[in-house]
Amino acid sequence: MLEAENLIFESYSRVTPSLHGYDSATRNLAGIRQLFLEAKLPFNFVPTITVTGSKGKGSTSIFCAALLQGLGHTVGLLTSPSFLSVRERIRVNGQAISEAAFVEIMDDLAPSIRRIDAALPADQYLSPTGLFLAWAMRHFMQSGVTAMVLEVGRGGRFDDVRLIENRVSCFTPIMAEHLDKLGPTVADVVWHKTGIIKSNSAAVSAPQSPEVSQQIRQACHELGASFQQAGQDILFEQQRESGFQRVVIKGDTFELNTPAIYQATNLATAYAAVSALQVGDIHQPAVSKIIHAVRLPGRCDTVSDTPLVFVDGAINRESAKQFRDSVLTLSRGPIILVTALPHDKDHVGLLETLMPYAAHTIITQVSAQHLHFTDAVAQTAQQLSADVTHQPAVFEAFAQAIERAGQTGTIWVVGTQSLVRDALQFWRQDLENLLHSNPPSD
Image (cartoon, rainbow, N blue to C red):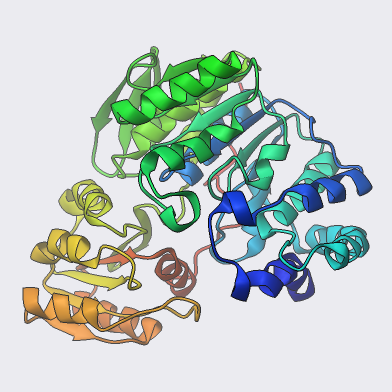
């Protein structure tokens, strides 16, 4: 398995030290296209939804796949990043690809990958996104999938997932992100994202700012694609209960097994995308049943009851507010906040939003070595409160949080995705299946 992982990242690692500039200049899809041709992987396989955006991509992709499974399809799902194993990126009906299948595909593709990579110019590479896509397509073919949901790695116009023909392009909220690769403006980011739209297809979107919405609509108009937006063309209502919520979309009622208030919008967007795919009657009980079984790892994720532990990947003021508003009424005192944020994240916004509710805050780092941390987060926290501990060793930080929270308190683990990964590992989460159970179809 380690050899397979090394193969996927080998080409990218070769060029990383010299890889600077926008994706439009540094990314080239020719190598992955050649791999698909040599390996006889299809570009147009089964009805497909491609998902892009700045936040909520993973959750919306998971909801799309679950809705399609509820319609009776065998569904291939490609997402990123992974938490505990790279196998989590590739799933069929919620189940991660097995280690044996992953290695078998490596044995099949490795000769072509190495030959193509060796022939590339020094400044070109086979992207990990493209290689995961190739792995996924082979696995989906072998598994007999009848529908696919593909999450874009970054951007869209120069992302390898764009190579696959889709019937529906799905946009989650778009904002300023990866400006060093997609920027320098939000309009540039949207231009990259709209690169996934195909001629005479369908596009759906989560609620967007007026400027972003207009730019997506214009791109659809130029390509002859239809366009619908959740909250405008697709109306939905949200009713919060203790620990879960009900979402009503076009008369269909869904119970979400999560307190995360933002997931209602993600579900409505996914509902619109699956409806636009036109591969079954979405108004049936089996669809609602499977949505109730969906798990969304690392997103207001409850990983322990004693003490109560919520894990979330919020990294700025707005996402911290959404996390706080989702879990505050469910939390029991004392609340212990554990956070780790690299130097380029909005640590001030997150700390100012969450620390007033915490009896104690622990500033830590993560086990991953590629992220850069500074003392600024701890210094800001100490300016906001005297009840702060700086514990760089992440697993020791979790242990200290448990001791402070006791059996009846609550721990908020909130920060960069690598912190989420460490928390899921520490609390021994099983992410092999995205469904709590497999509901029977009616």
